[in-house]
Length: 270
Image (cartoon, rainbow, N blue to C red; front, side, top):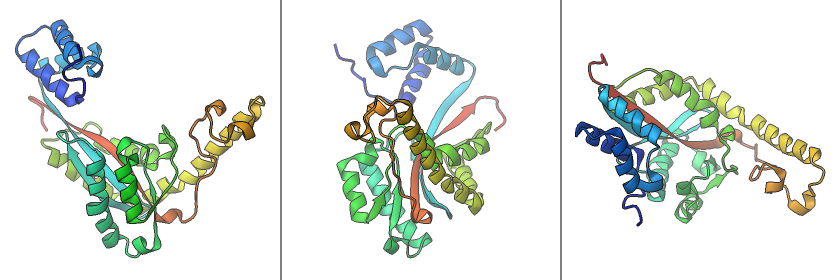
């Protein structure tokens, strides 16, 4: 029989663990009951035991906020937050692009919309759906190539979010609003030179990516490059680009997500 709730969030399952633990259900029984309901989507046994212990030790909740940030060499352009009750999809993403990002670019980067926007985002489903592609075309953005599974080529992943994690490490907050305020303050006080540094590392990373592919091809002479093409699984770097645009690097806007977790415990001085 198909699992009734095979599509669910981690936060939903944590709430179930907390409820069953409060009823005094044994952890092994919690694991079995959740496996019957969630099937492949179920948290691992290790994680279930972990959260049972967390709640037994006084954890009240673990709320999450999804951060979406658009930025360039001059700093943040647009920040958006989704609560744990919301999930990013094509409709939400397109709404952010049209009703939040575009006005922010018009107000904060005057003239950029008319000159043209180079836009970099990854290949997650909300970014590649037909609706999103159509919306970006209507906005007139030029989308830069980005190979799948390449956080090393995403400035937010290899640079910006690392700085934010250091800022938030060890901190606890009373509400989602407190998290949002700290994050907004952090990005708006970060020097412009930091944003420039993060983005200007990207062409060099592109170059190293291309060189590593060429080196792999030379070391594996049995690969017929003309037959296989520059981006095939036989090269060992499927999806990696051989060329990327580096012109007008100042003009591009990047988008990335980061999941911010708000932790609260009993008897802890916030």
